[in-house]
Length: 251
Image 1: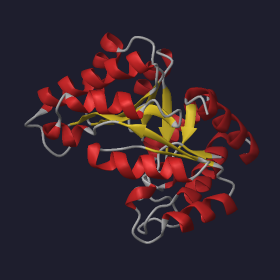
Image 2: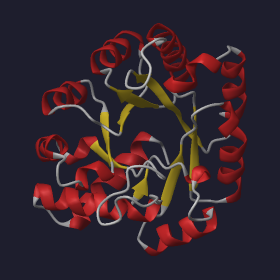
Image 3: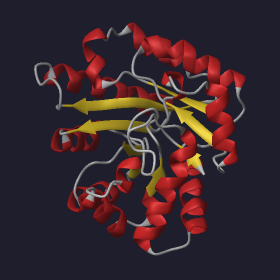
């Protein structure tokens, strides 16, 4: 299995070494770490250099858009020469916490889409309560980069719109929650060929560890729930989602 979105540099209950050991023991053989802002760049670059099975993304999270300056583009271009940088992310729109700078978020999102296109890298998209704007901006400005809708939270109808564009859905621990009816319906109705696994460590811990700090090892519970919903073998989920991730991120 591959955990395609895991902030292992933000863990508090585990060291990185412990998290990687636990991941390996549970069948997770590759991990991808996103960034939220340039302060994360050094730790991610250090981890991808230190561990063979750890890869990185570079980008500025929408909540950090106020700290943006255009020098970040050149910094990402330089760091992305490292072949273990496999995407631009996580980038996008978040209208949940603070709607006062939505226009700035859009502007920074567009700049990072164009950067991904220039570098021929996938775009790992954070979209919280901004489905229409996220979709409209991607369809207008993205020119050829693969798109991953990280921590997908939309309806079945929105999911179908996304995969019609050829985009992929990142599915994490939320799908294991008893009350996550909408997410379970999405998984049931979307072909496995458009799904990849993620934890969003240290957040959104799946059942049976909900309420505790998440870690990459727990991605197996996401895979188990997908297998249960789709009524297919766990091994099939493992094989197809791993193949999807390797293709999308050119691992």
